[in-house]
Image (cartoon, rainbow, N blue to C red; front, side, top):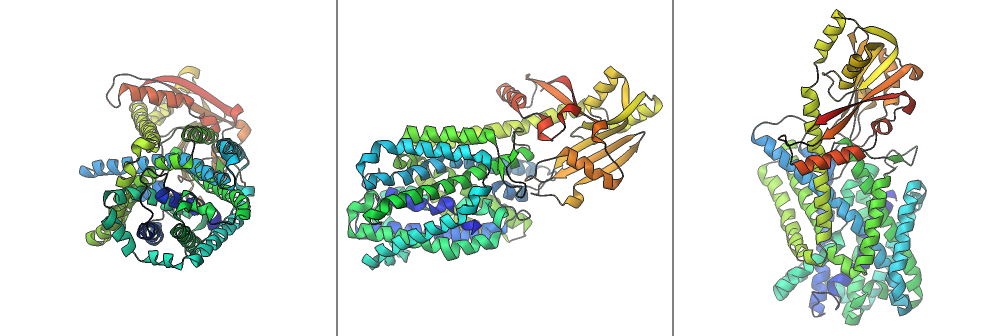
Amino acid sequence: MGAVGVVYGDIGTSPLYAIKECLSPASPHAMQLTPDNVLGVLSLIIWALTILVSIKYLSFVMRADNRGEGGILAILALAVPDRQPSGNQRKIRASLIAMGIFGAALLYGDGILTPAVSILSAVEGLNVATPLFKSYVVPITVVVLIFLFASQRFGTGGVGAVFGPVMLFWFLTIAALGVTGILKHPQVIAAVNPWHGISFFVRNGWPGFVVLGTVFLAVTGAEALYADMGHFGRRPIHRAWFIIVFPALLLNYLGQGALILGDPATAVNPFYLLAPSWGILPLVLLATMAAVIASQALISGAFSLTMQAIQLGFCPRMKIDHTSSKERGQIYVPYINWALMLSCIGLVIGFGSSSSLAAAYGIAVTLTMVITTVLFYVVARYRWGWSFWLAGLEAGVFLLIELAFFGANALKISHGGWFPLVVGALIFTLMMTWQRGRQLLAEKLRSGSLPLNLFLADIKANPPLRVRGTAVFLFSNSDGTPLALLHNLKHNMILHERVVILTILTDDIPHVDPMSRLSTEELGDGFYRVIGHYGFMEDPDVPQLLRGCAAQGLEFSEDRTTFFLSRETLIATAHPGMAIWREKLFAFMARNAQRPTEFFRLPANRVVELGMQVEI
């Protein structure tokens, strides 16, 4: 039930607009609504769902789980494990990482478009009931969007409890509507024969290829099946699709096609015209609820993706609120939430209709699917040991279909398809700049850092004044001496009786076994090294981590512990490494990143920051 409610919200609301955009006379690629053309489009939709969802994602891609977690960053971690390559492998690894990060960046564009197009399509059903609502569709959509995003800070736990039942009722309703249409024109069932889709291209040529761009609207949301695997597991997602979702979608699409076969004029909005006149307003309400749920899944996905990007070092630290004490996956990222809200509202007002928005929808998802297929090939070939022919055949078939969809969607770039590409390119630039900037900063700090063994030898030979208490120095290089420690000793000329050098590492797995969370090592003369490990789906909690040290013989008293942090002021220079504009961008992001005190959950009254200037 949970999988029905969350995983299938996006693809489950595609009947609101997919057939309409394929066959509507108002569509820019409108064609004659002959029975053969209607059956051809239906056949393409049916087999797109079958091949891309049932076969590709559910039968193949979902096998590539990173300890139970899915999604493009999870498969990226599988494709490029955290070990040092050499030669050409380094270039291949860098290319795969860039490809995976670009795919992740494109998902933010999808996260903006899905709420806008889904909710606007649902509210447009009011136009079918009466033309009096025409001027109120956009304002009502904006109000719904504001309500949706404003409620995010309360968490999805309470609302999530009704997601499953509402979506189940939605799927039963659209299946029943489809059956009513099929019973009137049962010849529509012939669309299950793939020959109708093939002959559609033979008859229509280039215009038939162009229609693929709108046929793809029926499978948007397929990537969510993989991304949400960690929340529900593979088996519930399989069962929900084959028992409930897939049959309901097939019946509704066939029902809409049957309606158009009987009366081509209904192609203007076949979804709502399937319903009796008395049922249109209740159906609008139900569709709006389903669209909100579909949007919620994408918004939550954007939050999870942001947390993963932060932990993997591709995004600056941001404030992350946990909205549930039981489910660690339920998080709220305020900055991302309000950015998505403003973008969605701007799209709705700027485009004005779901048909206009549909022109922008699809290209980002097709690119993400292509990237997922390439990464899956790498995993199957080099991690699982599949033969070149087996892995290549599997990936080649899917790439052939997905590249055809991409080519058709690329024709829509000038009609709005540029928007998700611009969003993806912008976020990709930010992510790669942050990752490269952190590398340069780490190299700079490492080159100016004193090896820890030399520092300890000097302390033993020239012992400074020691004061009571424990000092914890956070430093990314566990073998080096923290710069904050050197500055504290240089300026204050004292050391605490216990000095702990703490390093937080993010592993390329979603969750770290609690038994492997931390390691402690006594270095002598009151010095200790503590290393904490976290997965990319976890956020660090330093006080809790240090409390766990007691089991390894190192106890902490919070009121006698001081945390020392380095605070670097970055100065962009003409040194080799990055273009000067990227260095300035990195410095800007670093200044506006969440403070380490909040990110690592340090007690604010026990933190001392020592500043320094660093040229990058």
